[in-house]
Amino acid sequence: MNNLSKNWYLYVPAILLFIAVLNLPYGYYEMLRVVITIFAIFFAFKLNTIKQNGLMIVMIAIIVLFNPISPMHLDKGSWMLLDIISAIVFLVSSSKISEKE
Image 1 (cartoon, helix red, strand yellow):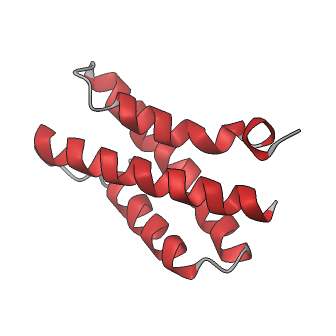
Image 2 (tube, helix red, strand yellow):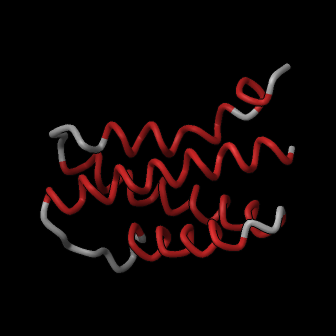
């Protein structure tokens, strides 16, 4: 079984973030904050375990940015850019984690 099919769940946050650039109901973005924060915490621990400290620090920034407890309020254009950048960070992190597993 290859790493992509074995670790498919690692790509979920990137997919959700790419979908977020569409014009969706506000509830999607509320759910996205919770899901991305949970995934980012998981990724930060995984990245720490495999000694990817730079990516781990970026993941901590994503945790702060998307946290649902104290949400940041930005305009749609800013969020679209941050969603795309965050999705790319999740994709890079997913590949690093998959390589080590």
